[in-house]
Image (cartoon, rainbow, N blue to C red):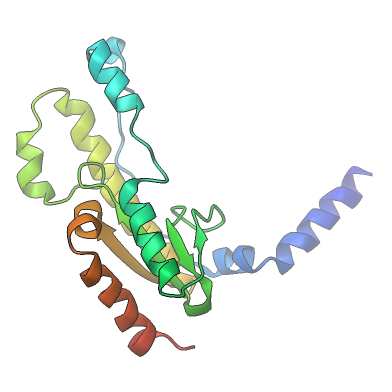
Amino acid sequence: MVTNIHFFICVFLEHDFFYQQFCKMKKYKEPAIKVPRFSEANGFYTTKKRSEIMAKIKATETKPEIRLRKTLWALGFRYRKNVKKLPGNPDIVISKFKLVIFIDGSFWHGYNWKEKREKIKSNRNFWIPKIERNIQRDKENNHKLQQMGFHVLRFWDHQVKKEISACITRIFEYINEGSEY
């Protein structure tokens, strides 16, 4: 009985598009940056108030993400959001054009990192490797998605807040010129 189920799963996975694309991918070569666990035992400390503030930060359904999605929807684009089958769980996927869109938080994904890195004062031994690993993971996910045939666009949260028309223009430029549809 177990072998029959195992056979069924293997046959199912062989026909799954994402599994096939994953098998074709070349591995990303750069070794992963090690991030220490954030705990007092490792020498990291944070106040209770700071901990409460950090706990309220969301990974999905952020205001910039919702704003861009609503604008795209109003313009007639249909998409999927937070697709877990794709590397990096993209914020927006427009399958028709093989387009993946991420809206990255400035702090978490290292906007202007060379300058901002020096400004981190507390728990530097945690935050610097943490953010550098996030930057590295973004590059890995871009690589994997491109190998799967997707075009990747990344916008900073402040770009979506202040210059949404420029973001929409970049999306239209890809769809009008770069897509093979």
